Image (cartoon, rainbow, N blue to C red; front, side, top):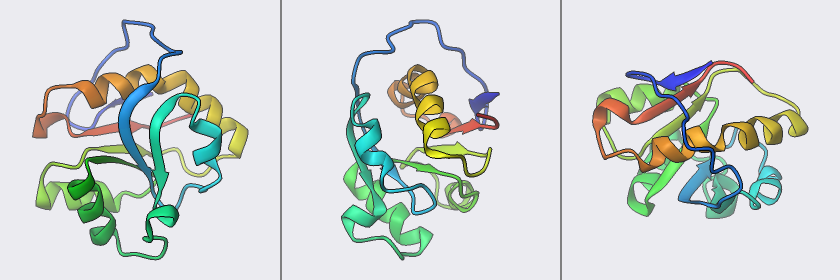
Length: 136
């Protein structure tokens, strides 16, 4: 089940095979190896390891994402808590289902790319700055 942290949204367009023209930043709790695996559906994808933030505090990652126009993809609730204090941007894709094996993560991402695209393309609004997924 998924939804906006402050609301809900539905997928209706079915553009699965198009590139996602946004910048996603994978948090340190997601394998950096997935960057290579997901490049076929996401045009700009990076990992905190590759931008010099591998062991950085969440606030440092937050500031990097904010200043570089990235959307944070994380399993970490701390980013949602930071967002409630500091506001938006950056947007967050919060994966609340815990760690998964590589193949499950790739399948999940592929199956949900349109929801992520719609969330990222949504008008800038603090009411919809976090997309939450509760299960694979």
